[in-house]
Image 1 (cartoon, rainbow, N blue to C red):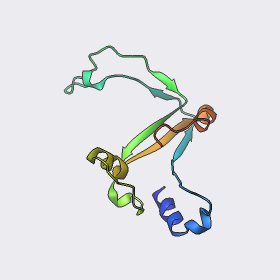
Image 2: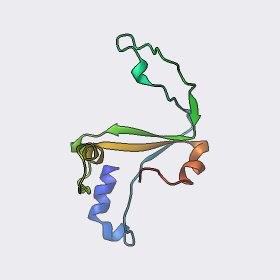
Image 3: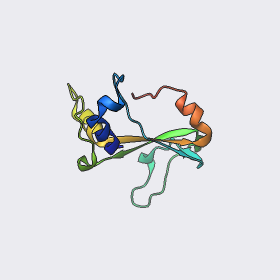
Length: 118
């Protein structure tokens, strides 16, 4: 995605003529079932990895977001809006990336709603 951002930044006049702003969000569509849980990992014994609390039931989701940290050397070269941001926000803007993982049966649900953090 970062290569695409750099490419379009160089040739924005050609590809993004009428765009006022562009948001890039990578999406992986899969046939895998996507499971999530609201488990509180602070109730896990660090030495053994055994969960000691009340475990909520896992839930199948139509889609979810995977967030990961990215090295600055792999990031695109466009500047980010950093006006008045905290250290936490600075880290999020520069180093955290999100990828939507969407089950094939959840494609309509995913694309039919507004992304909450944009």
